Image (cartoon, rainbow, N blue to C red; front, side):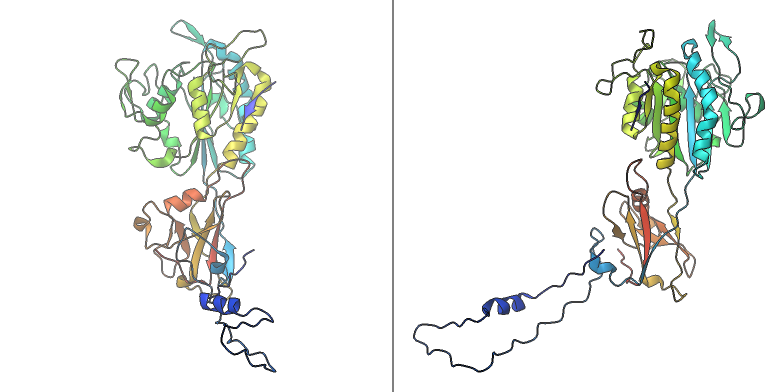
Length: 423
């Protein structure tokens, strides 16, 4: 059995004076003080002065709260149209002899995987890091199993296609994470022609694209999961003469890998103990449980399957990875302004409200420009006059992204009619 893991209500305020007056006048009762004459009978009950009018709905001045009173002045709330950003999916397939059945599954299933992603209207690209070829090959006395992706995703004779790029790379069973980083940045020992290297492939990735990494291996990485993300760069800690770049999430790297997902089909065997290996039908086990991969799957919210389940694991795994890619695809934070009923937009009466699908909607403040965003919530106009678009600041943009399968869809609304809240 395969295992894949993963109406607003205005508030009226009463003054303290009015409350005191009301409490002093009990219905049908009188009150005397000892030694004073009793009150004179009256044929009519004296009337109280009218209470002060309720205050007008306040404009929101603290963007950390969004009460119903603020949006009462809005003439309309229009959900902003949001375009999905591209998705890049990088597969890394171990070429060792023990991986022959897994290589066959990748070749047989990757087209259906790509088709599932494509049917959701996403602009996707698949990058394959693995030896390229259609038959076993011997390198250094070892028989290795290359990958050949047929059309329509791949090209003729194991070639590339419009949405597919194959960087031929002899993926060593314990060096997957090192080779990923090294060939990404083409550092010493990982460039084209080197035994651990490949042709450049970073140019195939789109800066704005969501990134997903999918690893297929029956071994573990000797390079720690934390180093994969935060290595400071420099000589390889394992092999003299090799140089590794900074990790994917190192502060010196561009933020294009922020929010990436890591998925894997490998030798894990327990949801409670990452050191436990799965068991093949013949009662043998993989060499390791792939604990470093489990760490990355858990940290990024990816999915995983047990390689021991053989062909039964691959269909659900392909589907689970595709579902995760679709569910976590990011959307652009450049939003067109709606046209109000009157046809003329007053840029001083525009507000933006964001929800990430988990927390209540938040009306975020307007700032002067992108430089004024800082590390806080906000939005700003494009430079054009009159403006036709709004841009979310990085923090608000992140809060407008999906948090993965099983949650509400994030939403951005443009509110027209209320005085713009600014900071």
